[in-house]
Length: 534
Image 1: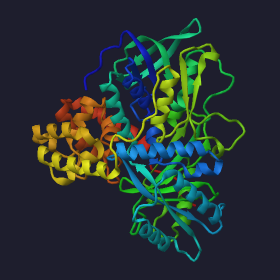
Image 2: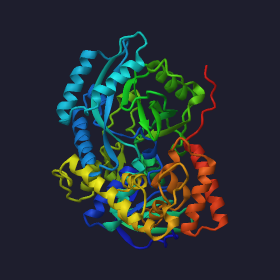
Image 3: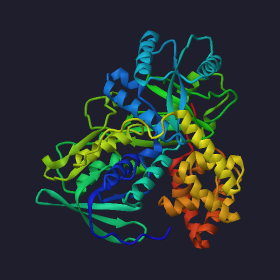
Image 4: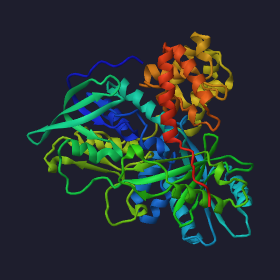
């Protein structure tokens, strides 16, 4: 993708932060006809969004804290995503496994699940009984575990959801720039006037004027206010680190997500993800630089030991942990409460009382409710956004039928096999038609990115031309995220880089630079634990 020209002029709204919340807000405002600029200091979805547990859920645990309105909101948004983004968000059975010495009683859980199903209007999938029996046989170690089934959903790759909303925002007229840092906010006469930016790839600095600035930078929200010389009574963000570990699949590994108690009674998940198991998450207060956050040795050991408590007979040892990653949840700052008790509902802060009229900060939020947060944020800047009624696609069966039709069409147009066509549709939905045309145009476009994946060079080229993917990391970790595969290696990286380079006209020097940058980012993100188990 060629370097974008320097920005100039005035925008109605500038959104800083290109995670799922910032992109959703930019999309909502652009669809309302506003001139919107969206900037992200790294790449879209490269921060907190990519370090989530990757579930779209109503928040069963929120019932414990009586956050009924958040549960209702989350369930409504879950259903909307399942219907309208069926290629990315899929219903998934969840199994709640309660140990005999657990902190929650089976009776309380039965009532909570009944209430949850009433709010959701959904029962577990047909495979729930099979999944439950399989888990019961796997965890049977002479102790009477209690296992309950319910349904939520999974978005394996929220990076793809962000990319799709980004395209929709740009089609609606938004201007989007990744690898573009906000240096400072100019405030004159107690009102926002301009934002100073730096293109991190070219080094060019420039300024744009605006009436509204939406600070959607997640754990960096306080830093943006500091750069604007705002003096706040207390921090807005109380960062909470969440760590995960990745384990290989094993014979009989659960096909459903498992929700259970960790060693200390905290809730954790064991979820099938990208051909492996995702175990998490922890909750540790963290006020360090969010860009440098990592899973600690203690967190890794805690998660693995909690996993072994659930599956004592599974032949996995500490050295089988493939990787660990962590992110900082931008929860509201509360000085005297445990992380588990802090609300997961989002807050929208109007800084007019801080003598910065026109500056709005987004605190908290989660994958499931990003769209509803975006509507609320748009209203906060004077846009009359109604609540949606019904779904664009009326039923889940209709959505699935549409996807099957896409797969057959892609297979025919692109001259690809069924597996490749299905892989494209699964990540790109309706944009698959554009990718199919690219694949049809040249045999090199139909080449897979590496021998272990059905995903093609055409997808990478589409990402570079239409989804603001500027680097190899942008492509392989966020737009066509094949690098999360458990078999990914340096050889795979090199193969993908060479094939992408041919299509995007990268020279040999560029290929070497991109491979090195990718390797550094990959190892920072998916770090192999070095701790020796005790």
